[in-house]
Image 1 (tube, rainbow, N blue to C red):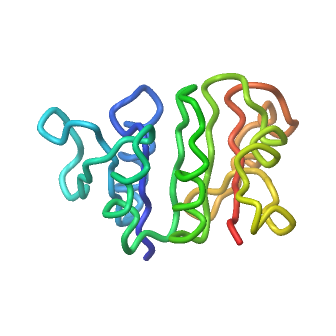
Image 2: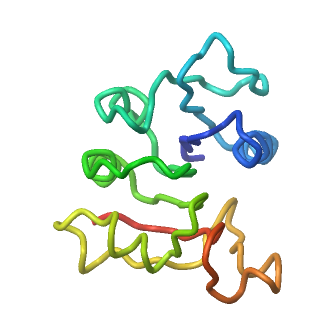
Length: 151
């Protein structure tokens, strides 16, 4: 099974993503600013890093296939997205600032993959987020998960 990096793993949404992924048998790595303060399920790999500091992400992205990207309204540093495009096959994005998946596909794609990256309903453990809830089947602003496949 592939390794999933979860950003924001101690937050209101991220803690549930980490728990569910671990329960489903996924190999989970949690990106945290302060590993000493992180309270995570047993078996979850903890990686020190910060989305606002792209150079801290290299070790966290090593051997990772997918990223669950909870972007909490921080300024977007293109280097973060470039690093993810270089190291992972899939990014599942959840906006916390009212950004739609269409906005994400326009603003976060590295230029090299702009023509091939396509937002879609998020998938997790082989299930589409669109199949779980009728409310999530139509695009809406804010909180909309989008799956982005770099390159």
